[in-house]
Length: 240
Image (cartoon, rainbow, N blue to C red; front, side, top):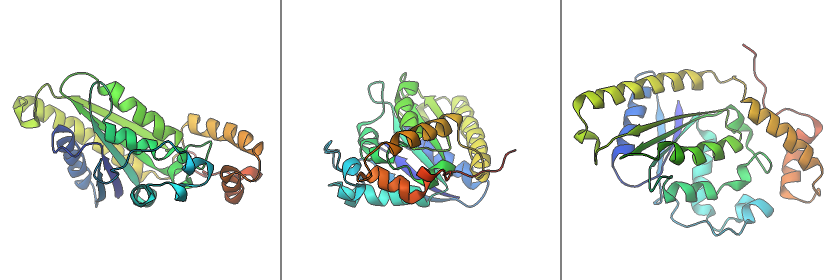
């Protein structure tokens, strides 16, 4: 399994520890090649909101030298792992900035066919509350990319570092991570699973919308090149 890992923080703390345990659990089940990116180090520039990636093409993003390699890695990977600590009841600024750089991937713009088959896992830790509110915007965004399935798991540490937790709590969390890894491994191995009903319905709606665009727009040209405007489906899967 090739997995692209987007770390939402450079801090080598609880979230990184959880991610490492998750990757180790995956490796127990087979060969795993992880391509890891740390934010903000690997995407140090804030999105300018210029919308060039949407209106002209992603190659016109002023930060293409950073966003391009990350996208290439995600496209080549079999699966994605996105992590974030909870910062003031939300995702990290680095993770938010990462998502801000890829609006053109939304289904209503230029979704990548690879994502319709790709599984993703969102992982978060918190000293206290905010787990759900941190993971939700990440999961929601990548669903709009057309990601086949999005899995989520968060851990409330109630300590400044992982090793400060009681040993029994550490074992409990490690067991939970192992179960999540097993479920995710099975899901990724099932490469022909259907995208969610939301993805299929939204794609059909967007196809109708894009047909009404002027044919000079990057979105229209992209959909036309893919053959989607002529009824070609972007996802072909075997029914169970």
